[in-house]
Length: 599
Image (tube, rainbow, N blue to C red; front, side, top):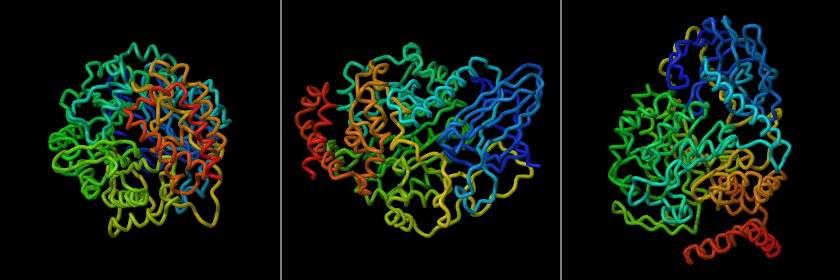
């Protein structure tokens, strides 16, 4: 009998640990890792063993469904109670009441993942489960139930292509702090322009009062993404905010330069559901000095201390090291992967330098002349870098998140250059086996050598087309349904947005504003809106442009937009500020004019 016991402490509200241990029993497969966290596939049925208790409790666990259309249902039976839960695609948190005295939970999935989606893997696969935990916090359970209800409505509205939504964002972009400790700023940071956009909001407070003012926008969101142009560890209120996020069971994604990860700041992070993105971009002090300053060795010491304090990989907070490939650091890609492996970080993130020909940053730093436009890599080279990074990470046992693959099609859309990059990484070697601290396994079977246990095989079987998972009903891009970014520089529909849709304090009316509804309507029809085409840093738009999927009119509109951006920069942004109230209408007129000229 398969018996798996997680040795991790279970985080309960308030940061305390529960003594209750959830045991994986029959029906679960061996442990795997994705998104820097351990999980287990279950078959059509499975069982969890719980320690009996006299009082009522709640079982909270992460559940991943491969289906996009809510067609997969997970039945949870415990202590005579039965819950039927529609599952949202990808990871979501479910929380169910466990009656007093219940010693087990039976799980049953309504449908399996079609075999065509895991060729070479003979297992019966239905859903993935991770981090099951028991708690007794009724308020936390209510928060999680509310977030789940909103997510279900949101998915239905997205599948129906609705432009005006009753649901609120599942993911909320936030702006914790507007001041940074790196001065002068990082050479690729458009600091002055960003602070000009932020205006009087640079010093706007971000507190619990901010969250209360947001109301259901905050309460219904399950994921928070800090997109501040500043260093969050400089905040005096950070502890209090982290408590507020944790009380509602939210996941926080937060970027830092890592230079002030002091013992006190490390202590703030331990045990919290945080994904910490450390912007490093270099494997040596010399290259780091060309991008920022001379603090490289300090950052590595801080990271080692943090990773040791949290107990190594697969423990919260998750530590992700970011590498943005540029001319100045491209030669250090392999060394950076090796550094990630040596430190034991949870994941390496490959993030492209934002494509913006209008950015005119020009620095002398660390003996290097950094000119933004010259550091941008051409598209073919970026594809090769993606392939190289994938192969290097496979060889060194490092999990990779390639943000150029946002929306998919990086490998399949540009196979020749991607494969060339893999070959440039050198001869392939067997992937390193990942170990998970605090895990005890009894009788677990070995993983199949050719399996695709993560549910995302690199290539589907050629002989048989895969069965539908409902993805054909999705819009061209789902971000304007799922996300809203309330930032000091303004409201954005996604993190790649080319311009704010409205000022920071207009978040409530912007969610269903006419322009955002128009963006949703176009994407639901399978077309890019003018706003999307103007957001050329978006990987989905870039892949469409380089894959010849854009019309001549759309390409002409992008060219006109680049000319406008350069002219606006030369005039110190004055034309943009004067025309800000009518930018949406002007973009539409420009696109129509470009279409006529392109004929």
